Amino acid sequence: MDSQPFPVDAPLDVADAARLARSCLMAEQACALAKWVGRPGRTVTAGRVVRRADVAAAGTVVGVPVPDRVRTAADVPALHRPWSFALGSGLLKISGSVAAAGPALEQGSSSTDTEALDAWWAGFRAVCTAESDTRHEGSVITLALAFLEAVTMPDGADPNSLWPRVVAIIERREENEDPLGLGYVGSLTQYADYETRDPFAGLVDLLRRLGAVTGHNSTTAAVTALGRWSLAKAQADRPRTVTLDMPADAVVELLADHVRRGTDPWPAAWQWIEYRRPADAARELLTAAADLSAAARIGAGDVADSLGDEALAAWQAVAHLPNLGAHARVSLTAIADDEPRIAPADARWLAVEFATAALDGIGPDEALTVLFDRLPGESLEARVNVAAGVDHPDAARVAAAVREFLDSGAVPSIDQMYQLKVGLMRWRPPIWRRILVPSTITLGDLHAVIQILFGWDGDHLHQFEAGGKRYSDPFFDLGGDEKDESGVRLRDVLATAAKKIRYEYDFGASWWHEITLERTTERDPGITYPLCTGFSGDSPVEYWSEDDPQEPEPFDLAETNRRLAKLNSTDDEDR
Image (tube, rainbow, N blue to C red):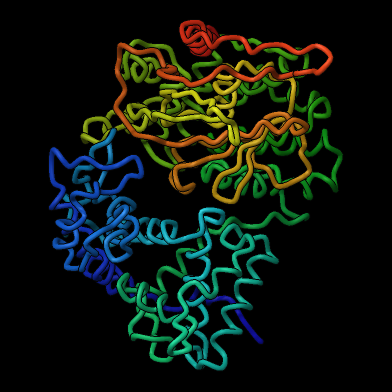
C-alpha cells in the first residue's frame, strides 16, 4: 500500500488553524477548568489531578457526567483530557500540591496566532501522552498523526484503505527510527468500536474535540486546517538526518538541534565520523561550531568527547578560540585526569553556555535550572547576577530572559520538591526510605541518592526503567538502547511514567527498587536537599554468604542525611 508522507508544501490556512486552536471543545473545556481552579488555586493529588472530593464539581464545570464513585479523576477520560490539555498548554500550572490558573489563561484571545497554535500543540501532546501506555509514552500521538496523514490522502477515509495506510505510516516511522514511532503498533486498536467495527471511532472523537477533524467516525472524518497544521508541525519538529557528504557546519547545526531538544547528538554523527579520521572529524566539527550557537558548540564538544584520546589534537588546536577555550580546557583535563577539576572562571562561563542552549531549546525555566545547578549564590537573584557578570556573548540575554520569567509569576521548577518513597521490591517485612528531592534532579544524581539511602557500595551496574525506556550511565555499555541518565530530569520522567519508576542495582543479585511519587511540595529555604524523612527496615547485606552470615547494619537516619548533604557540598566545591 502506497503511503507517501504528508506534503510539507501543502497550503496551510494558519489563521483558520489558530481559530480552531482557540475555539475547539477541548480548549474551551480546559479554559473553564482553569477559571474554576482560579487563584490561589486548588489542592491536587500526587498524581497532579483534582482530588476525589472535587471530581463531581470539575465534571459540572466542563459539562460531563461523572460516576458516583471514582478512584481518581484520571479514571474519567472526559474530564482528564481537558485537565491534561490545560496543564500542557499553560492554562493551568501546578506548584507543590496546588494547581492554579496559568499565564496562558490571562493571555487569552490577545495571543498571536503562533502563540495560540504553540499552546494548542503542547496541550495536544499532553493529552496524547496521558492516554498512552505508560511503557510507550508516544503511542497515541503516533497513532493520531498517522491517522491524520492517512485521511489526507486520496480516498483516505475509505474503510478498505484507511487501516492498511495507518499501519504502513506507523511502520515507516519505525523503520526510519522516527522518535514518534518506537514500536507502538499495539496502539492501533486502542480506540476501536467493536460494535460498529470502526477501528478508529474513539480516535475520531478525540481529534474532533481537539479541532483536528470533523465527522463522527472513520468514514466521515475530514482533516481540518488545524489537523493539517499539526501534521506540518510534527514533520518540521522531526530531527533532520546527517548524510555522509554533509559539510561540517551543516552537521554541527543538526547536532545543535539535538542539544536544544535534549537528545544525545552522538547517534546523529557517528556514521559521518566513521568515514573520516576521528581526529580530523573532531577538528572539523569544533572549528565549524566555534562561532555558531552555544548548542552547536555543546553538540560538537559532546561528539568530540565521545572520541576520547583521538580528539586530543583537535581540542589542542581550538583551545585558543574564545568561545571554545573553556570547553577545550575541561576536555583536555578530562583526557589527562580521571577526576578533572574545573577552574571557577571556566565553570561560570560554561554555566552560561549551557543555560543559553537551554533557553534556546526548552525555555527560560530550564535555563534558570541550569544556572541554579551550576552557579554559586545564596539566592536565585544572586545566581542570576553572577551569570550577568560572566564574559560570555549571551550572558546579558540569558539573565534578562530568566529575570522576565521570574517576574511573570511563574513557579520555577527548582522550587518544586518531590516526596518519593523508594522501596525494595518483593521484601517482607517491607524495606523503604522516604526522601525529599528537587524535581529537577537528574536520574544520574538520583542513582547517587539511592546508593546512600540503602548503603550500597556502588561497585555494580544499574539502570532505571520508566515509560518504556531505560536509563543508565553511558560509560557502561549495557548493550541496549539505554539513554543517558545524567541527561534527563526526574520531573520529565515522572510526567510520563505513571508516577512510578523502577531501579535495578547489581544485575547479578537484581536489587529491584520501586520509586513512587507521593506528593509535590515547595522548596523550604531552610532545608538542605536531598533529605531523608522516614524509613522502614534495615538494608539487607549486599554480599551475604552462608559461610560468613552477617546481620544488616541498623539504618542511621542522621548519618544518611549527613552523607546526602555532602552530595551538595561536593557540587559547591566544583563551582
